[in-house]
Length: 281
Image (tube, rainbow, N blue to C red; front, top):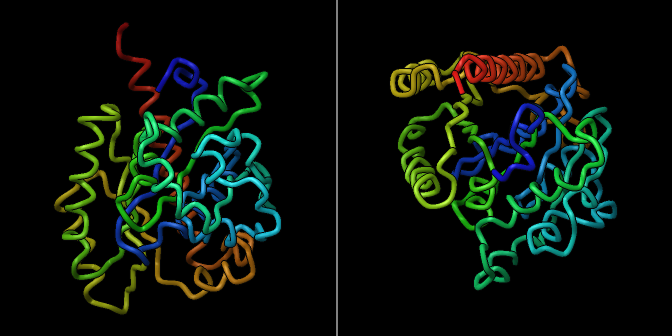
């Protein structure tokens, strides 16, 4: 990233990505963002999926999506002007709608087309009158494909968080994503890291879930979060009323899991900063 958004006060920018659909990307973006805000972090979610489910799940109606992530990525609006305050204190979102699906064609011949989101985030921080107006975390909800929008999110991010459904072909589904991460590292963003893998839709009644979890931990070790997101009906119901599950039912197992995940993410970041401070200049 450029000098405007690096250093002690820079936000942690995390792309939530997996080319497979239905693994819990949007659910993780909404509820991790909410849980981070609930423990005192300032959070921005960028909805980069043309389906706009993160926007819907946070109660942003289509009528309120006056300026969207499409306007930001094609350069017609500043990121800060597209942000909408959600019902969660400390949590804003740049909403999305179906218009975003045309961005890839529109940007086909655009200069630096893979850096459009990165530039928008840099401008956002450059234009702040004080650092206190910024945020601690930017979460990018990626579409379920490895297209130009996902590449933009990876080029703009410090790291990638991968929601992984506890199913038979879970590890095979990671192969293509990891290849894309390597390509982005080699050509666009050499500092991109794997933030972590979060196991989703974990079902204790299904003998396959523990087997998948064990296999993923064997392959990726401490990159796999301790917290696992259970298959939980309250998590599934919450988007239908435009609320994160933490507002819909704080005491349910799904809510408590996302609170646990948020604590792990914050601890992970604090540990990384402490290690960086110990490294001599």
